[in-house]
Length: 225
Ligand SMILES: [Zn+2]
Image (tube, rainbow, N blue to C red):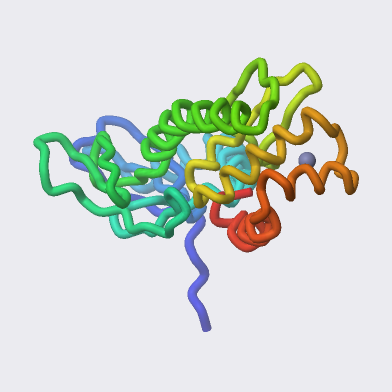
């Protein structure tokens, strides 16, 4: 028989001065018993906060699947390569390396994902518009504005007014995939559809588009899309 996983575990903390309730990532609630507290009182405390706990569990269930934890040793997609997050040797403050890039982090333990994704987003906001202006000039397209956003379902989009929006996660994909998405949006400025004429234009400026589409199909889940 398999022992049932407890719904709530009780932990004594010599540093705690009051009862506390937290929800672990695995869905188990942890009730902290303070120095002078008792498990009986902690159980009452948990019951009083049952409603909060159920809401927290519900929020946790609804979290997107990209919410996995990143730690030193985790392999993440960065510039098209699945790269291990390593502890940086140099420096007094905690930092990690992802391939050749060094990123400062608040601490080395715990989940590095929020911090690293913020670093990736910053890089994307500099690199993706620069590349788009460049490819717009090469292909002779008139772009008015480029925005880089956190999009859950799309790699890019554009408007008839010449505004191109790109998913920041394109800094995680190989260069040829990033360039394909940019070309795709640029060609939409001439053809606002997915007609044969549109694909012929894409083919002309980006002959490797099929390979890029295949890469996106295979690896999209690594990006949480
Ligand atoms: Zn399209």
